Amino acid sequence: MRKFFTLLIASCFSFGLFLSTTYALSMSSENFELELAPGQTYKSSMRLTNSSDLAIDVNVEIASAIINASGRRVKIDETNSELPEGHLLKNWIQVSPLKLALNPGEAQNIDVVIDVPEDVSPGDYHAIITMKELPAGTDNSGTGLGVSTAIAKTIDIIIAGDIERKVDFLSFEIDDEAAKAGEIAFVSKFINSGGVPETISARIEIYDQEGNKIEKIVKRIDEQGEIETLDNINVSFPSQYIFPGAEVEVKTAWKNRNIPAGDYIAKIAGFWGTEKTFFEKEAAVSVSENVEISAFSADHTLFQTLPATFTAKIANKNPRATAYKASLSIKNLFGVSIYETDVTKNDGFLLGEQETVFSGNDLEWNEGFTLGAYTATFKLTYGESNTILEETTTFYVMTWWQILIAIAILVLIVLIVYKGISSYRKMRKKIAKLEHK
Image (cartoon, rainbow, N blue to C red; front, side, top):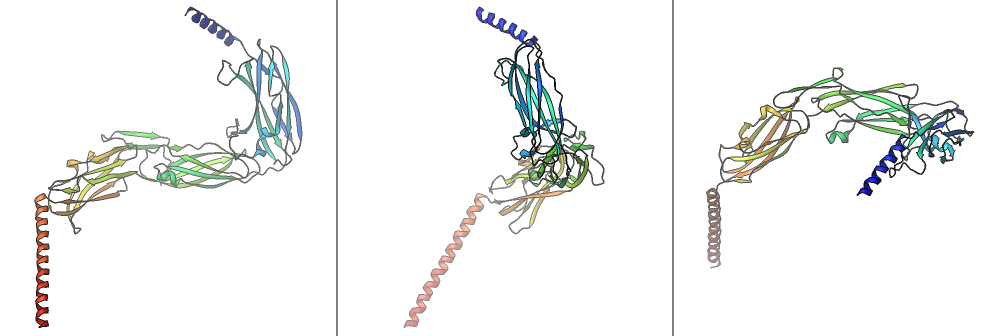
């Protein structure tokens, strides 16, 4: 145990010395800002110096980049199989060496060769070269104690020529599949008809039918009538990067779904490209209450006596409470209504994101003629637009003695019919004998 603590203290002391040491990798060259022609080759070098007091290893990485709407360089996700290779600057660049070791105070050159393709289109191309430094003999894979720091250089290349820039905003519509699943989402489609990659930035805002932007919505959140306001009802639209000839489909969700049911207008406005060419469209949005009768049935198929009881369930999938009215009606075998009553409860509100259950005394029929087959209807009227939903179920009311009497009457009828048929046959036989004589 003593040996273990001695090793632990020594390790902590060594690690403290490791962290207290400064690693300083410096580079003499500036960022690359070049104007090149198709087919041209450019050669240069970067000189790295280890200004620290420990030996370090250096890993060199190259990544194609874009300049987003805010002017920042962002590395391109090259795992996307649809990216055209001709627009990835990384594929034009050769760096040597990609790994090197530097002793304290040592300097070394990294050669950079850029081969511009013959068929490249005029435009702007970007890349980032990153030099990651580590203490000698360590790695940054997450399995060791190596702590990585890095410096980077940017490469911006302009290919001269007539640059064709064009992005077409094809459509802005409601996502039907998302709407069926209870979400409110939009689909925006763009196509880059030009010759260079472009950045698209936009914002979606929601307006009422009078054209007023929705910034504050009042909602009822429970049966006590507590009121809460919601601010800044907008839709997040992620910045997009679109390559020449590519078509992108951007799906954006309306995350704040607490607004009342009704008709609204969604407006998208934004710009594309370095010259910030403006675009806009709008789409109609219909917000439903998203309420359903999830179940309705008689508690028994056959009731021997009244009351006949039922169970119904109403699911309110909205986060806010919804006003409603509910009723139970009974029709006899001939479709004549013989009973109807209001069964609304909870002060006429379906609580948000909850299921309201009606059972027992909530839904019962205890009056009227009892013998026979009946149809019960559960009717729900809800929301500001008074949407109506109905569910029906069939049941029977008959006591055991009524069943026995019915069976007895049926047996008697069968006997009478049988007796009549037998008498008829005997009479036919007598007539046949008389006619034969």
